Image (cartoon, rainbow, N blue to C red):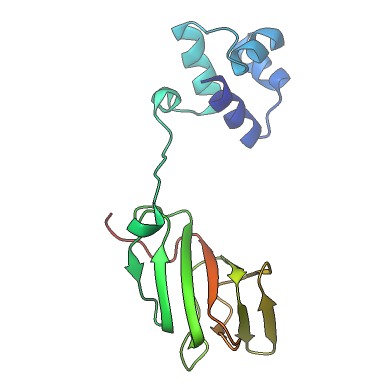
Amino acid sequence: MGARLRASRQVQGLTIEQVAAATNLTKGFLSRVERDETSPSVATLVTLCQVLSVPIGSLFEEPDTEVVHMEDAPRINLGGRGLVERMLTPRSQSRVQVLRSSLDVGASGGDDLYTINCDVEVLHVLAGELEVLFTNRTVVMAAGDTLTFSGREPHNWRNTGSTSADIIWTLVPAAWSGSS
């Protein structure tokens, strides 16, 4: 509970001093609460939650945690050719989407440049080589390379290497989700 209260305070840019002043609690007491060294009374917890605009119930909820094993990751097809794509994040996750693609030699994203409905794409090459084409440039990538760009920038990709390639795509926010 303390870590969640501290995170909420920090996200809002508030100091312990500011929260202490707003709640009429001491800095030392708030520090101990944030380190889970003491438990506040219900009345104090309600006051803290009001000052931090945190629903009191959220302090007791289990965090969203879900493991997707590679062998269970659903296969998807976002329009490319010569590849196997799997979604590594749950379909219900809307904040981020992670995809793993295994690309055959000659695989590509199609004939034309395309865009993805996301703010940021991060492409990481696990193995092999990849060319990423943009309107005015081509980026050549090898194993270990990572490229970050706007999903709304027209682009495409192709495996021009002599071996298959494995890549990870991270899309923020998730470009596509469905029921899990």
